[in-house]
Amino acid sequence: MIRAIEFFSGIGAFSQAARNSSVEVIAAFDQSEAANETFALNYQLRPKSKNLDSISEQEIESADIWWMSPPCTPFSVRGKQLDQHDARAKSFLNLIEKIPKKMPQAILIENVAAFQQSQVHAFLRHSLIKCGYHLNEVSMCSTQFGVPMRRRRYFMIASNKPFVLIDPEPIPTSPVSSFLQESLTELILDDQIINKYGDGFDIVSEGDLHGTLICFTKEYARCMKASGTILRMSDNRLRRISPSEILRLLGFQNNFVFPQRIDLPTQWKLVGNSVDVRAIKHLLKQVTSVVDCGEG
Image (cartoon, rainbow, N blue to C red; front, top):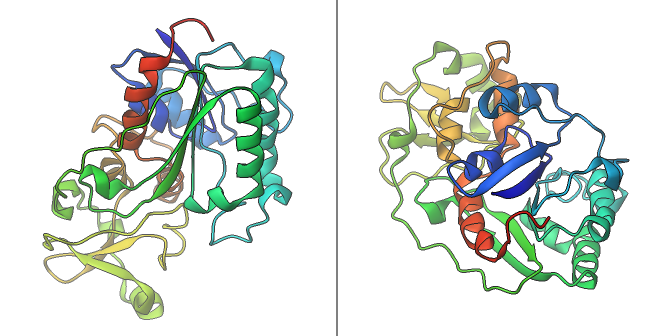
């Protein structure tokens, strides 16, 4: 088996993509208790809550693949774009400094598109090239996998062997209705919320065969403006898209569950921080062809 570590693991999009493959996730790291509890329930592996700002190379197991999906706030156009000066970038910068000492065969990275224009990205590229890695960088969106949701993200594969990353074959887009499964009353918006925020909603009708949802963020439970699409039901009522429906849009299996104690707002925050599983599968399928088992 190919051994992998999932840094910034969240609810385990990488572990989800690695299921039924030649990749075994041997360790995961995250500081969110809710995320770690959810991860453990679904993958029978408890992520370590170690602060990655100061983790040493001795505390990182040898592995063939590193997956990293670090906080996007330092680079996001919705944030202050403090880049390397943002405290939330410190953990990623620390891990970059550990790469020459651990030298995994392949490193996979995901972030928002604006990351490519950052100083952290420049430092990452310089460090990886100095270590002798071959880089493949690509932008992928959920729509490329037939999903009616715009969620464009930056991905990088750094490998110790050269290979050419092939773009995914375009898939016809499925209608939004094929991802819907909920009828929870707490998803329905009351008139007070609609009157206050309705002008800023992105609304798609559940019967629209060509409707496309916007990217769901961790703020969807708190602020519905530009943080995700609102669904217009057949009876004209408006409702949120449920966390389990967003998971289906992201390619998680139907048997993925949250612990009972995790409330809806927290579930929305967790799924908003996650990654499209199909995109990771696309990368893994190619990078595993140049990774030798057990040499991490």
